[in-house]
Length: 375
Image (cartoon, rainbow, N blue to C red; front, side):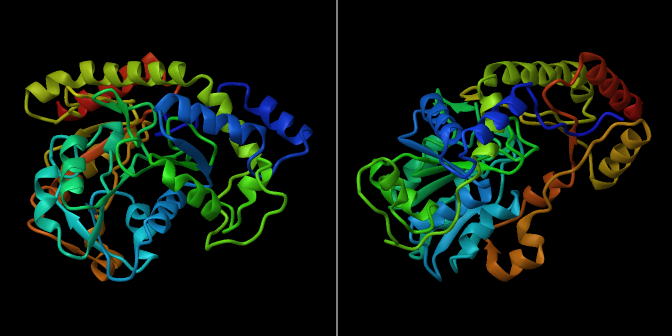
């Protein structure tokens, strides 16, 4: 069986975890947490990067830092994972969904402005498949309407928009290091902070509402409870696992990009024949091969293709059920405008196996079987 996903592993993870244990510092903000934070800051140019226990918690921290209150409205696409909405629903916000672009599956930037009301507080673009949203347009809208921008860049590590790292163009950026992502610590994430004025508050919220971070830096002689917060700090053993991959980030990225390109080249004739639609990457975007998907003609065709691939020992899957159609989406949100593409395009999407170490033989076999299905 060719699995849909294999968590990345470079070989040094066990050694680094062992070292974290030997350091007698396996809780958060140890040697490996600090090294991961610095790697992210150096790589992205963010003012500050803080590892978290998940991307969900990074989004929750962003909502806390923005002081989202009950009744506030947050604009985002419906085609996303539940965490994008949950983080703001927990603060009592109303979610306002807008339609996506069919080419990138990202939020349609031309529809955002019509969804803004006097209650709108933030826009949350989701960079699907590591392909950036049109951030120049989105940040301009936010500036003109005095709104915050929180980038859900869960899938966006090592991806760029016009030379800028995803997650660094809004107020905050949120990364995921879940086992399904390009770089993993099992469960984990990171918050990128792009305004220096937000750093101290972020550290306090992440450390249960205390100023412990300042204490550890020797800036104060004791720490205490100074504001609200929670426990968003991952174990240093998780960070040790992640660091081994971040040190090999370019190698992992190149490997995934090569697999992505093999898929694209091998399936391009099916696209020319009008049988499938392949991913589109705008010229100004540098993607990270987080996933490779194809879009079929309709839901029934997708179901049959996934079943056919499974019969041939290939793990292919569909993706999100649009949030606005879910029970919680109906309770906590509203769709603004017409659902022209969100549901119809999500019904067609099939994700093919993609992971570090996927072999050429495996991608060739998968391509062969997809072509055979359409024959």
